[in-house]
Image (cartoon, rainbow, N blue to C red):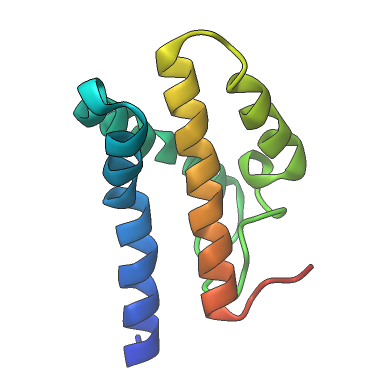
Length: 115
């Protein structure tokens, strides 16, 4: 059962995942901000690594450092992708980095940051 605090946590988390990328895109890529926002939201594909965990969703588990595509190695790769001079790759990398920032915020709000 969700408690009011859990509901607020979910609203914050999914707003950061689904709405804020369009704001970031508007700031960084004014002329193609809608396309950029969609690419950034598509970076949520990195959450497929949650399917490797049992249980798939655990509100008491921080995904940062737990799932392979949320590991420190993956984070380094996302930053390296920013160096590739192809706009869609840079936007996707920005989306991955923002995704991990959002998950980190969720870990803090949920009190499950382990490090």
